[in-house]
Length: 227
Image (cartoon, rainbow, N blue to C red):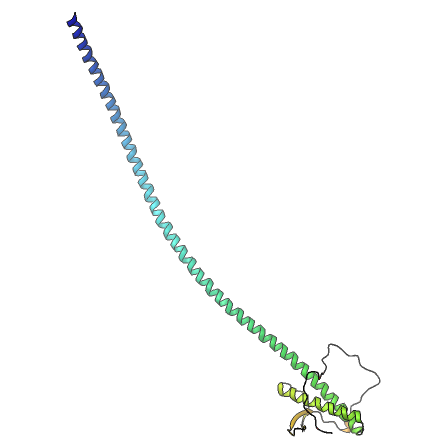
C-alpha cells in the first residue's frame, strides 16, 4: 500500500510539474507577444517623436531667421527715423529762420512806412512855417516854430541816413549848416511866396489815434542853425 501511495504521489508530482511547465510556457508566449507589441509601439513612438523633433528644429531655425530679419528691418527703420528726425529738425530751423526773416521784413516795411509818413508831415509843417515866416518875419512864435521845423529837418536827415530806402518824397536837396559848421544835406520842398499853401484855422481836425505822429521824446536832436 505504501509503495502504491508513493508511486501515486510521484505520478501526481510529475503531472503537477508538467502542468506547471505548460502554464509557464504559455505565460512566456504571452509575455513574448506583449514584448513584441510593446517594442513595435515603442519604435512607432520613437519615429513619431523624431519627426516632431525634426519639425520643431526646422521651425526653430526658420523662426530664428525670421526674428533676425525682423531685427534687421527694425534697425534699418530706426536709422531711417533718426535721419528723418534730423532732416525735420533742419527744416524746422530753416522755417523758424524764414519766419524771423519775414517778421523782420514786415517790421522794416512798417517802420519805413511810418518814417515816410513822418517825413511827409515834417515837410508839410516846414512848408507852412516857412510860408508864414516870409509873410511875418518879425513874428517871434513863428521864429521859434521855424527853428523847431529846422530841427525836424535835421531829424529827417538822420532818418534818411539810417534808412536810405526812404528817397521817394518828391523833395530837393538843400544845404544846412548847423552850429558845428559841418554841412549836412537835407530834403525840403522849395516854396515861394506865390506858392503859399492855404491854412484853415477855423476848425480843428479830429486826431486819429491810429495815425503815426512825430514825437521828439527820447531823441537827441542836432543843434539848428542860428536865426
